[in-house]
Length: 166
Image 1 (cartoon, rainbow, N blue to C red):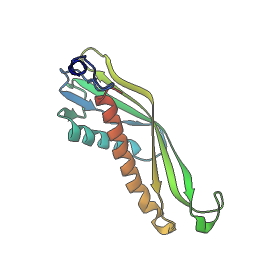
Image 2: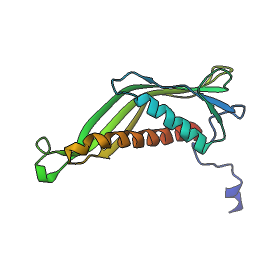
Image 3: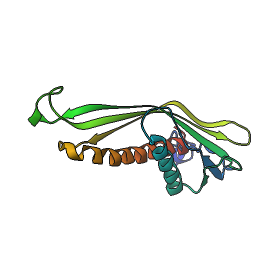
Image 4: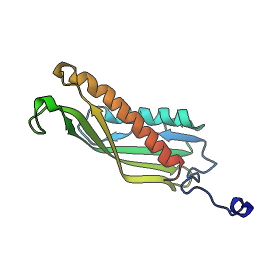
C-alpha cells in the first residue's frame, strides 16, 4: 500500500496554468459584438469579482504594467424557451416559464512579458436557464437578475478553467 502513495500520481487537470511570476492580471473590458446592451460590462465585472474572491492576484483594468492580460469578446447571445406553462397549452401555444440563455465568447489570457498564451478558448459556450413569471408585468424585472446570475456563473466557470488548467 505504501507504494501507491509514492508513485507520483496526481489528479488530472489540477496543475496550475498561471506561472508563479504572474502577480498582476489586467482584466480588460470585454468587447460586445452583439446587440445585447451592456452584457460585456456585466461579464467583465463578474470576472473581476471572481478573481478577487478566489485568488490572491492583483486585478487591474489597464494592461500597462500587468504581468498577464485577460481579454474577452462576446460573440453571440441567444435565448430560447425550454419549458412552458401547462395551464396555457402546449409548446408553441403556451406561455414560456423557463428560458435558456446561451452566450458565445472568445477568451484569452496572455503573459504580458513574453506574449505566450496561458489560456485560450475561441469558442467558450456558456448556457444558463432562468425562470420567468407568467405575469407579463414582472417579465422585464426578471431579466436583469437572470443576467446577473448568468454573469456570476460564467465568471466562476471561466476562472476555474483558467486556474485548474482545463
